[in-house]
Length: 288
Image (cartoon, rainbow, N blue to C red; front, side):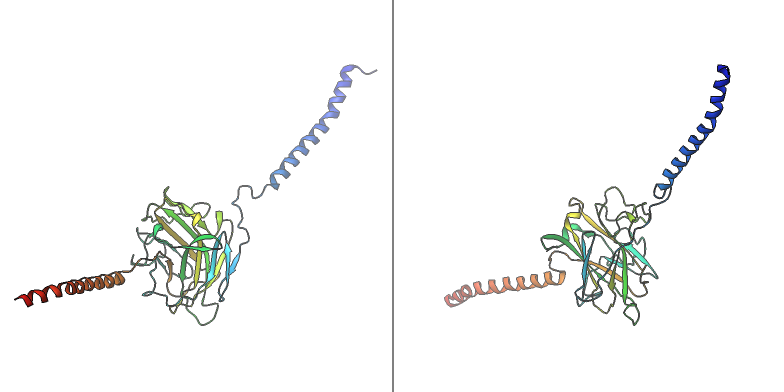
């Protein structure tokens, strides 16, 4: 008979291969689990985006709660509209409105690139939802339909209490690195994970091209100013003149209207004083 020591040694020798096999199996399972994790150590991929085409009359659609629609407002262009942001560059372009300078492809003077008061914005109600309304007047050169098209590839709208920011730095999620007083109200591509875009006509010639309705509920009401950032040129290169953004504001008489009303009021006061004073003058004249 074999001694107990001999039996135990044989058992140990038989267990060694089994232990090695089990250990290898654990390594394989761990490696498979690790490989199954999405994009380990890499940035998340951009998801397929929505391309909204509003280049035809009557066309419209929504992305992330905002309504984009075709526009044929006339007259438009400098001299007829009051843009708060003007941008121009080739083959892509980007910019945002600020009183602090011209950070990207924004064009001087500040008469056409400046801050916007949230309190000045008019409210439009569509199907029971309140919106702020913005308009894009785009101008691309060419003779074909595609050459007179513009792709709006990013649109971000912020509220802030600092109207003079000039950052050109982006956060990992694709939003601008504004100061802590600034809040994101709308993002065409949330988290930088999608590639949504809006295709709009860009005929220029005094005809506006796109309306954008942004829900009022997205805006921080206690913030005083509104910043609009946009990027274009991915699907259709920017090749022409200025792109100008306009905010629809509450009805306030312009300077010429105010001057006219003041003049009418002055004349009315003079005539009223003359009318009331004439009988008294005639009475004094007759008594003499």
